[in-house]
Image 1: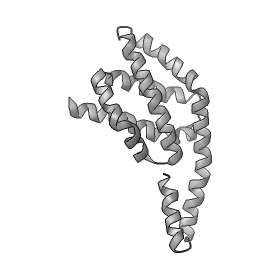
Image 2: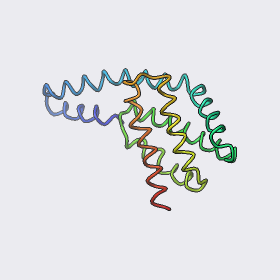
Image 3: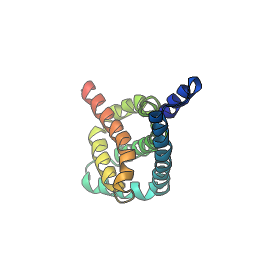
Image 4: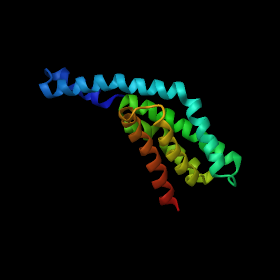
Length: 158
């Protein structure tokens, strides 16, 4: 599940790890601790993060149907949770296989692409209030992966 560590373990089965491989292992292990701390911060502050985003969406999109905003918020709650796990695993494929393949269809059916884009932007701004810049670098690639995937899939179907 953790591809970088798994590869190093497989290498060690055949031979001792080389110095470069040991350094890679140290890096993976040391960043894993930081990734877990980011995960805990997101988990512990999820309601506070998303409540403000919900309020901002209601203010910015007064003509949008409430159930569409709620649907988009629930989607991004799931996205954030899956991105957090993908971050711990350091595995973008986990995110794509577990979430993005089925979520794309839901976003397309409900026509929430523009709301989804806005929510992603608000989320990235909001995370800056809870995470340091270095912490954001761990989660941002996965949130961007989800956002880009949803955007590119909606562009393909339009």
